[in-house]
Length: 432
Image: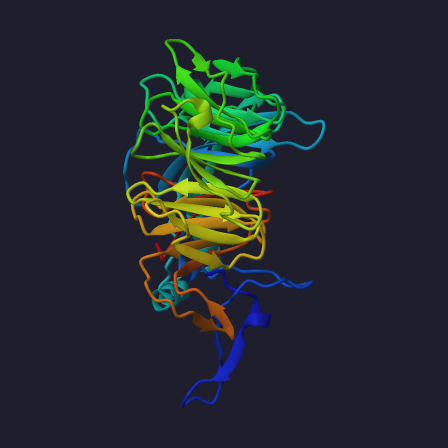
């Protein structure tokens, strides 16, 4: 968990010693007072890096690169993000390569002291500068001009030899498909500082208003779903050179569609959630007006913001404006299977770990990222600093403002990426 500054550290005398030693307390999130500053306990991280893009990014996705499954350091990761630029400035899609991501240093103090005694100050300074330069993370970018703020961006999970498709939801009410293959290639030679004007591969302007719901099918190449703020969901069917977007819509929701998720196993089934507080399960083979097969009418007490489908187990996780995270067993949707009330603000993102089916992450408007493990079966809360904490809560990450999305890296075990108002965090904890 994130550590605190000295004001949050207690002091107690050590047994058998005349002098006092500092005792670190477990830190639980609270309102930060003026003059206080959060400091991470780096012993809780295998790695932690921060990157700042040209503008705030509401949404991003991890690129499934050709490096494949891997472990070890330094780490290289690719991502694509969409900006929310300040008024008067241009928005863009940013293709990113983050490299030379090193593990946190584990210094052996005794050995370091012995070495320091034998070296001059000048030698030490030179060595430290050289080590810092070698360990410094590198961010390379290539940008594509985008008309309007990018509400949401998602990368097609199916690999292609020459093309990498990305879908973006614009605040202008249009959905664009882009090929970011050339931008990914340019990153291998340093990227570009210029924002390029590139024509989208395809644009759909048939939504009545802007939206946020968007998901590529993991089982059918090129199939896409997009949902808007007027409750309509469109199905995109790929053709040889473009897409056929259904004019008939899935419209059983009563208010804005906030998130959409294809089933990872059943190719015609998808889930959606809405401002109308409901979660719905659909089958796209049925007539549109009958396609909604299951409705959970009051899944949360207010807007249901986000959902995510477990890849191997019949579970769905959801997060709402009520700050509650719920886990649903799709075999029995009359009630939630688990409920966690930890966050103090609306939930902005949830996602299952790609290989550990019991672990998921969540982010909230309370500037927290929380990691959870359903494999912990205890129902008795932990008492930390006189506060009850769910035993399934593994880790709390802080240090960012207005965290919007989190994603696990599909190929690097335990690596998590988050985007916020000011920056991106790329980190791996000792807990997952």
